[in-house]
Structure formats: structure tokens, C-alpha cells
Amino acid sequence: MTFDWITVAGTIGAVASVASFTPQAWKIIHSRSTEGLSLGMFALTCLAFAAWTSFGLLKGEWALIIPNAICLCFALFILAMIALPERKTKEVAETLDPVA
Image 1: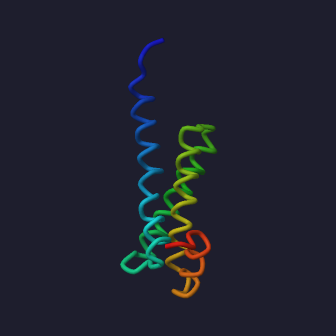
Image 2 (image 1 turned 135 degrees about the horizontal axis):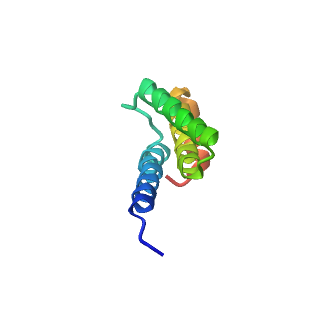
Image 3 (image 1 turned 60 degrees about the horizontal axis):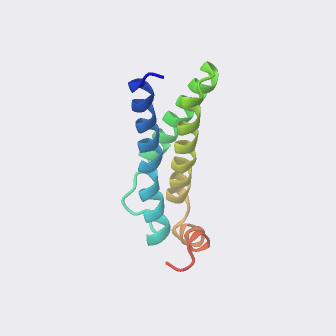
């Protein structure tokens, strides 16, 4: 078996992409606030991840589908939290992390 740098690079990129949304999602849940986050930016991010997921599906490439679908879920969560009224954002966050 030979070492495949392409697979290593792709795996690192996929893991980093998915992991990059975790701190923001957790900060929203913990702080109960989306202040300072751009609705437009996250809407565009969701569109990008939906397009990459669709591209992966059309090509049948799981290496594109899985990380982009996971990132889409995180980005949609953040987008929804930004779009919700502040009261609802706090309710969702309280449900997900009641001890914060």
C-alpha cells in the first residue's frame, strides 16, 4: 500500500471544515446570542455547502458528500439561530444546554 497524499489532504480539509463550525455553534448555544453574526454570510455559506453536497451527489463522490452535508447542517443551525427572534434563540440554546 502506498501513501496517498491526496487522500490525506482531502481528509484534513474535510475534518477542518466540519470542525470549524463547532466553536461558533457552541458559542451561540453557550452565550445565547448571535450578536455580530451576518445572516447574509451564513445564507451564502449554506448555499455553497448545498451546492457542494449536490455536486458530490451528482458525481457519486462520498468524500465530497459527507463533509459538505455535515457542514451544511451546522451552517443551517447557525443560520436558523441568527434568523430566529432573540427570545426563540435563547429557548433553543436553553434546550440544548440548560446549565449554561
